[in-house]
Length: 374
Ligand SMILES: *Cc1c(COP(=O)(O)O)cnc(C)c1O
Image (cartoon, rainbow, N blue to C red; front, side, top):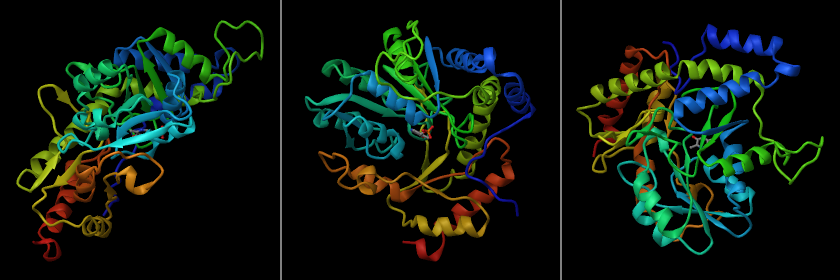
């Protein structure tokens, strides 16, 4: 029985050819060629004015928050259910993450819980489109405008996700993406900062290059203390090939989700929600077991392991894994109920329908096994 990975990149001859070209010829005068091309292709895909390739999404968030002026003693609001990469850059700047509860259907930040967490120290709200599901951007933008707080989109998981006709990451003050090997498109490690705000773009560009302004004519003259979060030309070459294939990569994510949806239909589970306004990119097909059904995710993890399938648990509440580190003003009951009942399901580009069947079989046998029956 072959191993079923929870995710795996799709690398074709195109990626190999571009990377080979970059590593052979992409030096000296040509050392930025693929980086510039990758930024152009990604901008066109997303429909934004400015993009900066970075070494990671974590770095892109750090740069963007720094450019917005987030600093010592400030607060930044985000959902309690998240990977720590969305919260860590806040702490790099001496600010504190403030964790609010999630919506039970979208698993993203619950906009109705945001205003009670806002203080005069709140400098930004990070909307993370978790597992490719979409945050309620209209409501978030409304809250942002009312309180004069920028809304940021961490879209690392939301390539292919579309909210009311706009691509995730193109709506807020700025958006960030990750091209880590597990994401929908990859450069091994890598990220992207995107925005439609020219001044913000220029500030981040300067910060990303050790504070050297594009207009500075003196050599080795930093105009401020910045960071070093640049992507290499070889990585960007792989990225160019991936963006050229992006529609197909997104289509396959959707296809795999549709397989799961059809095969899990009769079970007491909910999958990533889709409606007229919100079309997820389905980076990670995810199921949440209904509350009235007894479920222990350890049993499913063991079943997966016995069948040579990677199991991947839903993110824990950050307030649980880093208890005391971050601010939590109110209880987050949805987050604390959700994570225990949820699991990500494997999906990678060359996954076949019979592999989806193997995963579904494990889910079924776990839900109906003796230990799990109520
Ligand atoms: C993967 C991920 C990140 C981190 O990306 P890196 O490129 O590894 O820094 C940040 N935010 C979210 C939502 C992610 O899924």
